[in-house]
Image (cartoon, rainbow, N blue to C red):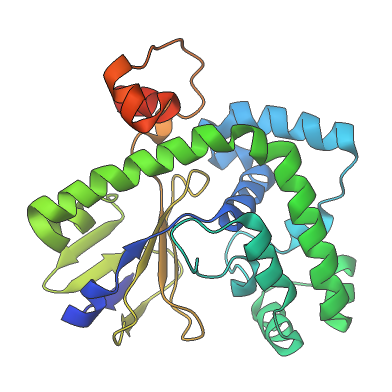
Length: 265
């Protein structure tokens, strides 16, 4: 369990954001363990075929996304509500070598040949990693990004309304059964983490994520603003191929894609 202690200042600094770089990282976890992410199997089939056809080697990226500890530099805290992937990859390229090595040292198990090479020359490794992530995005996530983004935006719209109607308790207690708000503390169910962390005025960035399902991921390292990544509302509809029609009036306001998702939700 992870207990996040909020002050009034922390609540004031809590915000929503999306992260294309994080969706890359989370989707690689899905490819590494598809049986644990049955909801995404339609995407896994398409993505695997696209990667094979392109001959893209994602070995380094796979090695950096183990089942437990994820290196924090892979996808930092989003600086804006919807950062561009290019900006996130620029930040990745600028990660100091000492941070890369410290994060790799924190990973358990033997290092692969690719990780050893990365450890010896982090600067060159970050360039290779950013290039692979960019190509990976173009091949397997960019085609579905409008659909994914619409789902994430619908989730944020819903939760913003909950916050306005019922405050922090209604917002947090509706996020997922894996989190609970009580008495100014947000308790997050983690299998391998047991800690109590005061946010100390940093607030919390809430990041809905398509590929984080069925889990949640949190990052509380003092080097970054704390982040909680959670599955968005309506995730079960993401890969449906029905022909639902978006209501005209709603589509005129928020766009056809978002209107269809809002209708399904």
